[in-house]
Length: 397
Image 1 (cartoon, helix red, strand yellow):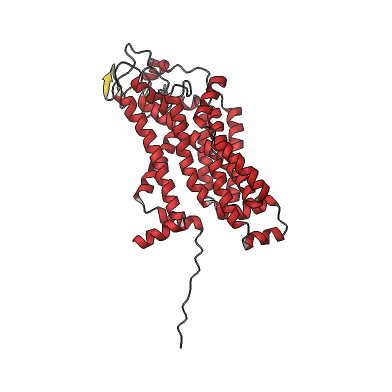
Image 2 (tube, helix red, strand yellow):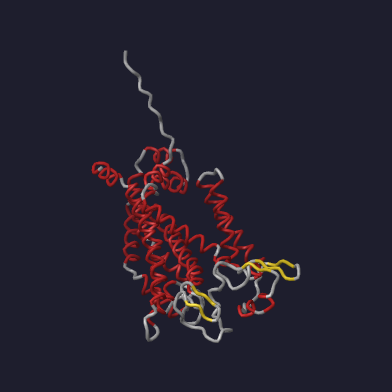
């Protein structure tokens, strides 16, 4: 009598298996913790660092000054964050989530531009007058200074070291050359670092997936022309192109995103091309072709989900590279004007006759830990996805 062994078929998805493989690593946990902290600071920056009260009561009237001064960008970021949280809880397919996210983002952008009308001028000195300081009660943000509040109503303002109290003011990370609080600017600069990394990488991924998919699926002449195009774009120095555009067209965050995205797609195209060359002869692809499905369905609904794994690894490194490019441009003094940036603050470390160590330590540390966190996450995904590395790890253990 033979024993019948019951085999249980695992219904766990590929991404869940990869996540289960990488999550026990301490480096991955630290990386996601740091990125999560940056996301939290970027989304809720107006409520974490601002010169105006969050809530206040005067004469029995309760008001929220910070809400009155929210910009279109602030409202848009909060709306997109809420949309992502809602979609994460809904039980929907990946395709439906992407479509809903794109539609919701478009609606949020239109409504924010139509409905949000903040005052044209912000005078932060007014929030330190008796009208606000002598209220019945008021609730201030954890960091009671806006990133562009240069404290001009104080007799002494400018570079100040951390933990130094002057005129009743206390700055945990000191102040920069114009008198603005460094901690506040660090918090608000996290939004620029994350946005330029994610949006630039998204642009390059879309271009790379489309062109790489066509190259891998058709091969032949299409592949040859596509590879020559890839080689041309790989030869373009992104930093020098950014410097050229800044010199001719001025400084713009959106321009930086587009240039970094348009010049960085070649690596993603190579990954997708290699995967599609392997997948195009598979039975499920041949079945989709025989069924008469349109090309877009074959490429992006059937083939892409089976070849997207290496793309996610490259994306994590791409975000880190985009953040470094923006920080480098700001360090050279060609970044955004008036907006806080880690690279811009790093540039102030050596501008005066003395070395301002806090202007080097805090922004430089933020750049280092952000790039390091994305690299840790990318390497963990690569080790979990690459079967050769997984096999070697199993042998070594």
